[in-house]
Amino acid sequence: MPAQDSSDVLKLDKQGVIHVMRITVGALISLLTAQLFKLPESYWAAITTLVVTQSTFGGSFKVSWQRFVGTAIGAAAGALLATYFGENIFIFAVGVFALGILCSALNLERAAYRFAGITLAITMLVAHPKAAWIISLHRFIEVSLGIAVALVLTAVWAEDPAKSE
Image 1 (tube, one colour):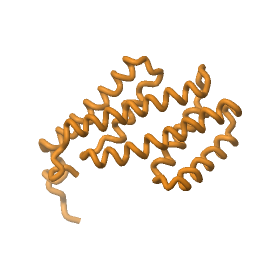
Image 2: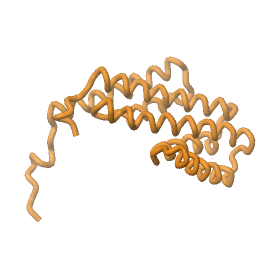
Image 3: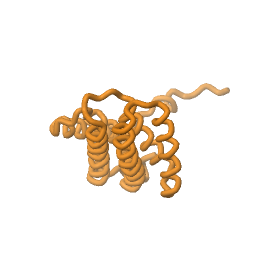
């Protein structure tokens, strides 16, 4: 196996730094905005921005749409199941299965199903002092905020597609 040239291993170019700056600024804007609105778990807005920000608006929109739809479905299911069954592991498993069937029937991508399951898990399995529907609503708002920031940032501060990966 030939030795790698250090220039192949360590590569820091202007486009790479700009990409890092865009994502950092987006995560910070999401976090501060969620905190401004006193959302209880504001870090979900920043996490969402980190997940959905892509090099191009089209790429960000596709990932964002799947996360948005999946989160909405998962939040609705979580509010319903947690309200009536609480932190029930068996019902959680049935819910995850049902979400998979629903997402497939709606012809959604697997990413939407994963986001739905994540939201369901957070709503059903994490102890919260408030009602399940409030937790679900907060999660949906936090994620939607993160998506909105990522899309606006990608549209306003676009990368050069020829230079991005």
